[in-house]
Image 1 (cartoon, rainbow, N blue to C red):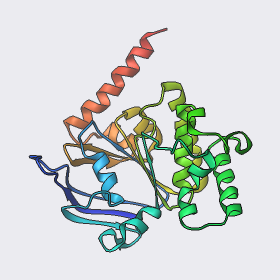
Image 2: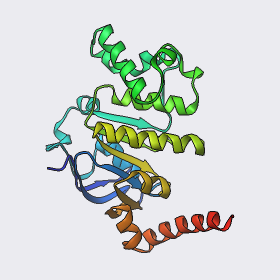
Image 3: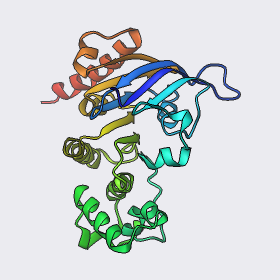
Length: 254
């Protein structure tokens, strides 16, 4: 059974002439790493926000683990989903440990359990607990803050992780390291990841399948190799051509 199913999903915003998400249908299997690729305004972030009910669809259904999310309490739904955004949103007056365990604290976990979980997750994202747990966000680099955002999203051990351009504001070298770390974490945990990006190289590197979107429509949903070999239309073909032109530049520099 698919872990996520989009069934003819539509979303239209006020004062907009077209659909932000235009009759999208797709099925995602447990444990997949799905990247959602497209330019700004294509609907990829809206699709992610529909998945955790930050928005509700105007048509169609979204089924998570066999249940229509329209029937679920939004707060309970979101607690069962990890969510990572580009602006990490750490609380500046809280330590790293407190930032990671903010939801467990609201759920009245005991202190020992929260401390153990924070240390476990700091280790998972490659930060030494004894060095980082008592620091504050301003004492961390952008890449380190993004790792904390990932740890916080994993704290309740969700089956599904939603990641909205989490590395978009990170420098190129750190971004590459974080991509590799994310691949390692995904392989170790076996969770389902949905990762939004406008970078074709990032999308093809990380995704075992890629959703290519444009103007609200899902143009193609397949493996990177199949998309390269058999682009669905001229838009997808132009994306691939742009990536090839970048490669040609580097091949020409010897």
